[in-house]
Length: 301
Image (cartoon, rainbow, N blue to C red; front, top):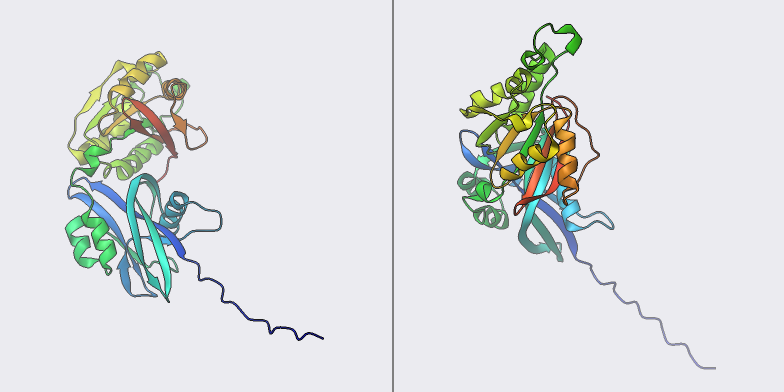
């Protein structure tokens, strides 16, 4: 009887670790371009936010998810910002990076990150613990904001009911709730690099931008294409004309949905379920002379 060959154990290959993260940027209204850095108490380090991919997840989806989980900020990703590679316990780890910008959210300390800071790029290069993170920050161009235009479409804040207002409807002002929403809009958009504010002639739309205009030191321009009852082609044409810069417009609950629908029929994609509550914002990203994507930011603090 033939003897059996002894079974030999083969080592399973050590699979590489895949992760993704964000070089999260904002244009501070007074201090200029800043990047978000995060402190991890477990490692006692300062890093750019990142984390491992979940099963079946692609790099970009993981980067956006990890940034939101660690920092509380929901972001828009702009472009691939390179790859980091290093060893972790003899295993190769690859981190895909994307430049991105927050559109909503706020930081709350959690198990992974107990503190975040918005700092100038040169300060980040001094404070970040790891050389690879410092290199990614160093590769952000000084004109990053100008090179990535966005348009912010804001529905005016709460203004009470038409039947309770005795004067011309165009003069109907914001309610106390609407004034608080205007302050919230200012807090969300003051670090978006906005250089123009354009409003419907209606008082409630102008008032919605007054706290932001004061913070940015900008005049509020008035444009009839943002008024109630305007043809969507006119509103969409105004928005398209702003697509090469950072601008915000304040308009109404009829004009905004019709204009966005007009843009969608020309190829713009909604990345969120459509809504248009008072005090909300649609963030539009252009590609050339057309808008390619839109994100919804509900009213909030």
